[in-house]
Length: 125
Image (cartoon, rainbow, N blue to C red; front, side):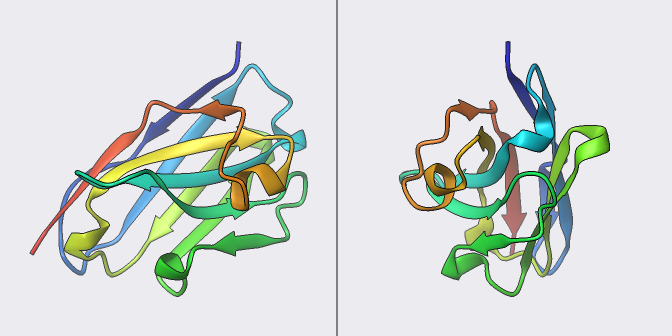
């Protein structure tokens, strides 16, 4: 079955950087668009960033993620990454990896076929 396993979260200070990783298995990774979502305490889960399948040559970011977040993929490793720079307390959330053959379902409709279990990022001020 499809498994998405996130890692790289933790407790960091404001201004630090983090790179989240998501290891995928059980799917032909290069044929899937990938995305990152996050859910802050007391809030709904929100889209953060998405990357197209195969080349990954096109990415799309939520307005809140533009400038500090970078999504990338390594098809040889079946992995997708989220680089977050200059972390802020408001970035505190559980970050989820997602996969779907449709880029649209990730970045527009926000209903990907597969989800990871999430990794906690906590940013202290």
